[in-house]
Image (cartoon, rainbow, N blue to C red; front, side, top):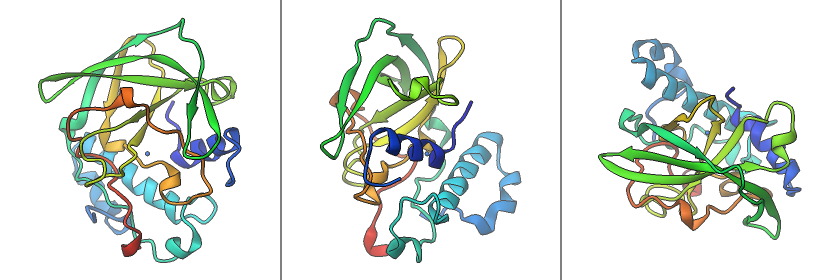
Length: 220
């Protein structure tokens, strides 16, 4: 079951007790054109449109009012199906919970739910995927997995601290990673949010030119 980015982050912010409560390739005006795209591209564009709607909504947006009032859309890499990969999830049921640091003094209690192994551009990679100890006992979030990652675009085309992916626990071992749905931590947009810091174990030694790009406040 897929989760809405805004809903997930509102709950995560409460769990972490933070101070607050996942280009112009497209925008909402082009929504009618989505039906012309192949299915995978259509899904990516819909994700982008929904994320932009969240950022425009004063009740859900992480943007301070001074940025939201002139907000006309996030910057995205162009949708690219080569960054939709099929992985194998190797579960780690005996993993011990640990405290993942955030950009504030707070910590997020996580467990390594498993290791996802996949191939991208004919090279093998692996990433740890996490399950929040508190969220896993919350109705509607029991199958939610958190995948933060770093890559070689960080600090250049994408946010220097890395990006996040939201996943769901699959029934079997096969799991799909769509890096076109990678998004920035909310603390990129507003200091009131407490965001987990991407573990160094999740560095990908390649460029992931997909998903949300860095946020340039000077242009917002």
